[in-house]
Amino acid sequence: MNFMMKRSFLLKPPRLLFEPTEIDDRDAVKQTLNGFTRAPVIVGAIGLLLQAAYVACCIWTYFYR
Image (tube, rainbow, N blue to C red; front, side):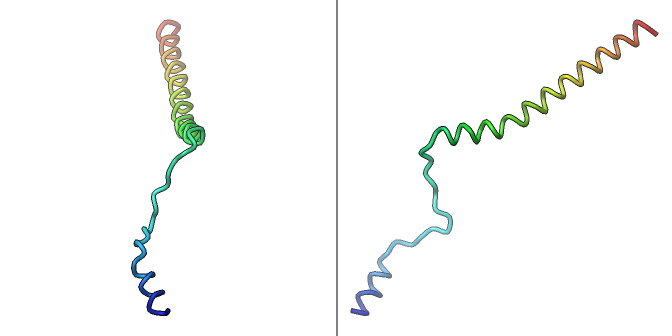
């Protein structure tokens, strides 16, 4: 009996340290991607607004000095 338990233990497939996870929920993936893409979009929009303000300030100082 003990020999059979050892043998069945040896015949089991090895477990991976990090088993791959299967993604079944597409909504969770979309929500995660939206979270990762929201921050760069906000930073880019703020950068464009600052650049537009700088250009407007340069134009204003050029014509009204």
